[in-house]
Image (cartoon, rainbow, N blue to C red; front, side, top):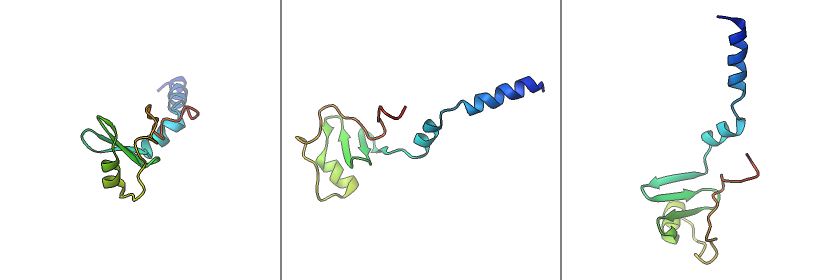
Length: 85
């Protein structure tokens, strides 16, 4: 193989963003069942209707559950931080 191509391939591998590898390794958002998304960072679960205290209590076993009034209407998940791109 041509040494020039070896150098090109090496730089292509090194060009992969490190942050994307970390996010794929450790995700804070997961879906325990269809139609439910839980955010481990904020300890909140959401369904098609929005924030669900019942699902949050079920999946996080939390005594202190945030009320729907304290949850922002526009949800930003903890791994959606705009400062870390």
